[in-house]
Image (spheres, rainbow, N blue to C red):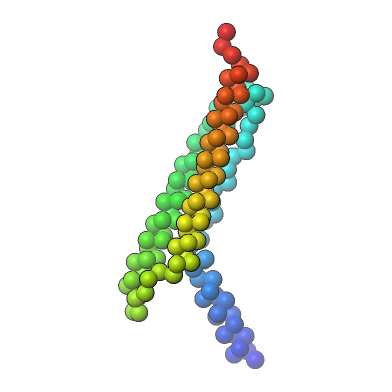
Length: 126
């Protein structure tokens, strides 16, 4: 009985290995909350700017980490005792994470730009 259980646990751990290998970079950065530019103060707009810049930098670092780890996994697969190409599921998983993060970066940027326009409309220089 314990032998079958041990095999089942080993199978689960082996199947989870690709996902665990990608966790080296942690999770995607959390995007900042959008602000309503027509209702915020100048200080709040500056804080929003800083939050967006920090998020984009963290996202760039995250994407670089994902690609670096993918390259490392490819090299290790090629150097293995029985060399094989890296599992396509790992490659697809990294590409999906990068694509999702990139879309979030674009959304955050668009929200911030809309907030800037709303702020300028609400605070015309006169």
